[in-house]
Length: 449
Image: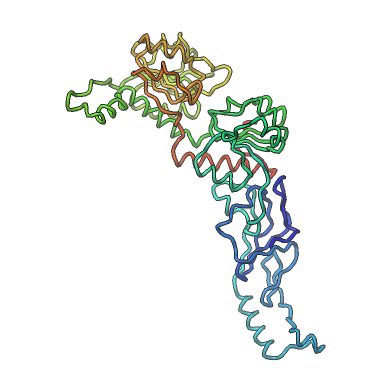
């Protein structure tokens, strides 16, 4: 049972300032002063006590031992008067009862009863440990819109915290928006999908858009700013995985790993050896973009061959800098697109850059499909104005044009740059931390807006 003094409504940020104590199996444990958010209060189901009781700003008595809640200090036990004694009008207890009570009180007083540190609102890896089990049965009423399917860790975390509406499973979206749109307070989406501006405009109570990914180019940041909608992403944690995949794509393109795999599986090897590939060591690598991911890619490629880059400004590092992407392409055997998508980079890689890369050059894109003009890339590949491409991202995901899929000199991956169990779990933690902080009314981590 939860005392009404500590009851929280889950449809609004809350601040718990009363001292809370939980009792499990007759043992008192002081939780201390809590400052927490309603969204995280369902997280300790696996630790549900046999019996819960909440007491706010008062003392509790167990087995004759009275302690001040939140202090852990022992107070002389309050005498327990039996019903028979009270009825007789005597304030004295039988000697045997008094002796037993004293011994029990002494034993309990000797038990260590430390007071845990105050619960804070910094909810990250183990959010289910941040709140006392007293709040187990408080139901979540904050409504969020989940824009696409996620890995189980994030799916479960969202479902434990919020009333989740799965946008991608709603058939009649217009009717749904008319009926429930005004109640949606948060959106969780992928960086490759973002949120359409028209949808944001239909959600008057929207307060946060949490992106599971680093890119935020598909969210109207200006509109979000005007409406004071927080936008968050998950930077840094995916850097290594994207850089690793980039190296794998390059090796696969030069050594035809995907085609070699099919060659063996189809039983063609006994008939003839596979055609020769191309040597990778010693190639010149050009990076379009030199942020966290670009720098991580450069570190992996440096032992293989010289690395140069193009960015909005010279980073003043040991690598060669080109202010013009066309000039960078002219000096590269492999051109890697690793820049963020924004109005200045959309369509940056077009015919001029591809022609500068030349008939022996390879284009690799692990950034955003919108940065490369797809029809120009297809034409360059068909006409053999470049040797090949390795692509993890596309202009209209998950749709890939047939003309591109039919080309044998292209290696494809289905936007899996950050798709490892470890990284997706870390990204999920960051998404939930941003949501928890927002609904708690505390500073939101990883905020873009």
